[in-house]
Image (cartoon, rainbow, N blue to C red; front, side):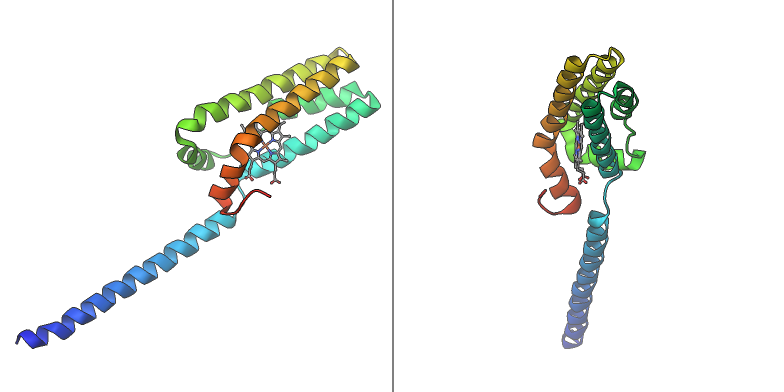
Length: 157
Ligand code: HEC
């Protein structure tokens, strides 16, 4: 009687192993599919980059109105959708306030840039622009690499 029991037990273990294997494979596929998909934040960033280029062009041409238009697009950049924000917050944990503060610095610097452009003061605009660039760099130096590693599973360039 007892011997009859063993083959079933073996089958059970094999089945469990199979299920575990399949679950892991499925989980892996889901995670990697997710990882490959760029965050909405990345598009926000690309647009920030484009608007910074417009500002550079405005400085070169002393076209202050161009900067008056571009600076608010930087200051009031769109936010990622709610679900993505949740993913970002979950990843950032206790670093979230720091991230928000750095984002706030970019906002303030872009508002200053807009004011300088309104004044048509080239020196002020250039200084404000440099300050703004520094706020971008400050966040990137801390957060970009861990972000890219976490959400895309690869090192940032
Ligand atoms: C509060 C943090 C923070 C600030 C401030 C910030 N960035 Fe970023 N930036 C990021 C993160 C995080 C990434 C990586 C996002 C990703 O790859 O999904 C990134 C990536 C980028 C990229 C690369 C996007 C790509 O194609 O991979 C550009 C360009 C960029 N940022 C521009 C800017 C500019 C310009 C500013 C300032 C006006 C700025 N960022 C301010 C956090 C920030």
